[in-house]
Length: 495
Ligand SMILES: *Cc1c(COP(=O)(O)O)cnc(C)c1O
Image (spheres, rainbow, N blue to C red):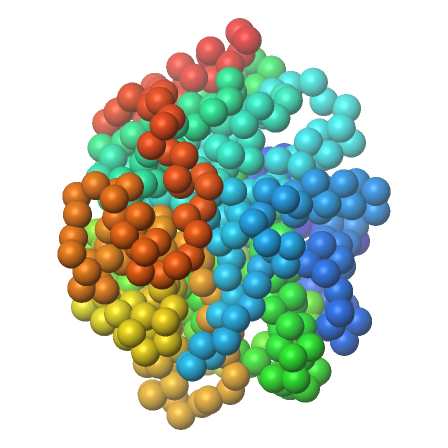
């Protein structure tokens, strides 16, 4: 059974269901599998459905859950909430394959994990016979927020509070969150950026003020710092690979690369876990936007925050502190918690850390970095439409730019699957502008126009936004974070 240990104290260990309940470890570390042995043979999954593939992955990673529990979670999550039976369709483009991860209820790839996380949490809760309330605190750069609100709405024994940067998420993303349904949800805007929101949520876990306000309330997280977010994301790497084999594009066992538009490093880390589980992954190409702290890190081995935070048209990747990188450092150092603590302390105190040369070289065997500025991202959206008739969102465009840059620099043309992480409709205005179409200030007019151009159906969850009332109006300063969270915990304690 895989044991999960904290990246900041390897003595702090637990099972997967305990890790799901806790979210972040109390020592501030991230629960990470202590070891993974190659144990899923993709040969057995070539004809498997998405759900069957998810079962294989979850059984390998969460064997403390019973088969029945996992079955209920998987089949409850991946159903008609998704607008296609395939759940994650894989389509061909000129430069590579594209897996479409945005067919879920909120039109972003976060749905894949956040439709199942509440089920894994509820099942974990039953296993432990608990009767406290699990209070989910979530920071969002735009997409996690809505996917988590949708996943947790009215789930018994849970409450969810989402913090988003007041400036920096798209108008549609903001509307999606502020119109959320459910009696256990709350949405708060923060006068700060995503990193500020994430720091706030992490701080709350160890804040005495917050702890004192919790009576019968346990704090957890729906961010990718929760292992329960990470694990379900491994599934689509196996599934997409199998689709290529099924279509005769590669032979089973041949290496395939993946290009991942990256922010908090959760999505791409799931690809690394897929590799450790036995998937023939060649390279994981980490694509960034103008906030290319990761590109620089994979090149130099130094992670440095000494740069400006840039607001881009791919807001879900506007992140400078990429939380899940901590898990990679931990795994590649042979679970050296002291090393990770030192790196994280340096990051906090000096704004940077560096890793040893041999570790960097080890990393570069699998990971490569690339990045695209705003112009390149817009041009690629337009080129893809004009030359291939495919409309992609800005995050996906960053990934396609990254793939081209990587191929040019390395000469490596191994077949590659690009992760398409959001529906273009979520960013209608920017996509339209990139296409050179007549611009409009009205998001719904932009969706309509994009529909005319692309012929793709407008996702139901986005089309209906226009009719829904805005339920949430609160905006807070960063300094008031702990006070606000403590107050919310107090309210939940009395419910
Ligand atoms: C969250 C998100 C990303 C980045 O994923 P990470 O797991 O944070 O690296 C990329 N694209 C979209 C559309 C997202 O919502």
